[in-house]
Length: 197
Image (cartoon, rainbow, N blue to C red; front, side, top):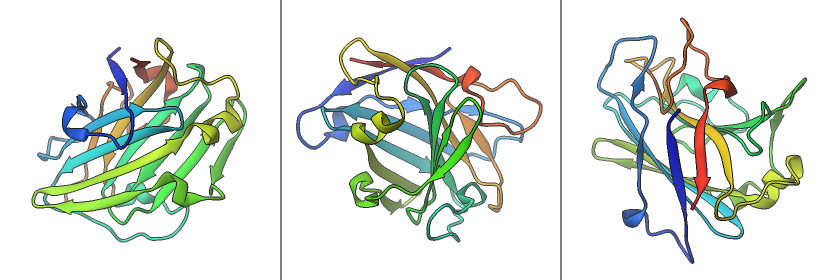
């Protein structure tokens, strides 16, 4: 199981100083040269995320809420705030179209937060791919996980993914490996450890 330490910040994140992890487990299909990194940091209000993809053939067809964005070029963050089998999935395409879900022990709920602006999803194209920055309000997480705390020494579990089901070069990448013969990202048993520093 891989581990990553989420650093605390004061004010706007200085992404140049925040360690990146490599989403470099190539799964299920041959390597087509797509790469991805992820950075995380936090303060007393938000978990901040920056994702970067290097890919030539970007697909960005979907807009609006709760679209199947994994068909487009897509970067994803799945996390279990209390380390059990309950988790969120956050999937975003280059248009900033987000698919957000909560997966409980006996239910799956697709979510449209009341104030999406509070997530501050900002996609950007680069010369060799695209990137995303966004934040997840800790108050949003606590609606489902009231005991969740973002504080030094606390840990939770998660995984990061890059996919593009209908891109010119379909691909599947993950931070932690997944032990299935066919694509399956919804596997909290394969999540790695995320530690608040």
